[in-house]
Amino acid sequence: MALSQLRLLTKRLVAAALAATFGATAVTVQAADIQPVQIAFLPDVHFHDIYADFRTDGFSGLANRKSGQQVAIRTMAAQLKSTRLFNENYFAFLAALDDIAAKGVKLVVLPGDFSDDGQPVHVRGLKQVLQRYSQQYGMRFLLTLGNHDPVRPLSHAAGKA
Image (cartoon, rainbow, N blue to C red; front, side, top):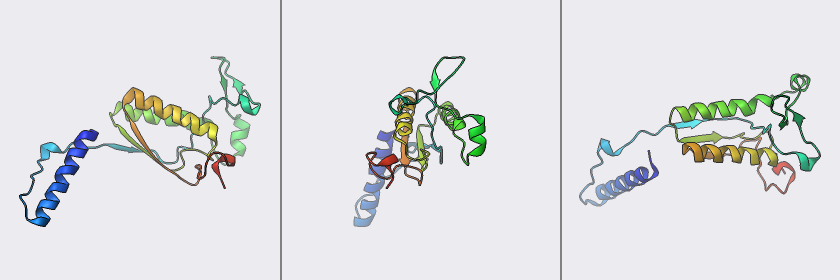
């Protein structure tokens, strides 16, 4: 449902409620005025930007042999010793957004844990991805904080207390 349609419907419903409350003529809301709304929920994406620029931190990444591009990925040995997966999150998130775009869904909610630990470099990467999908597909994104997300200004270490 377009934002203008949602506003119109809201105004009509409020007018109808006021009219019913104060005895004025009621406003009829017809079914034709209501459009279905599709919302996609992507919880716990733990976005890890494998193409992030870590050069300011003294790390340029590992060279991708096929593309020559530097990537920030973990080795399989590191992945096996960790309680979390990092490399897959980037590709799984993009695949989910591609699927959502193909279905024509325009409203996407990320209800918490959109980052792994609030690292500014990954939050910036997430912002770039969301902007790209917003521009390319007209998607709008709503994010709420989870326990892995920054809860304080980024001037604090990883946005954490």
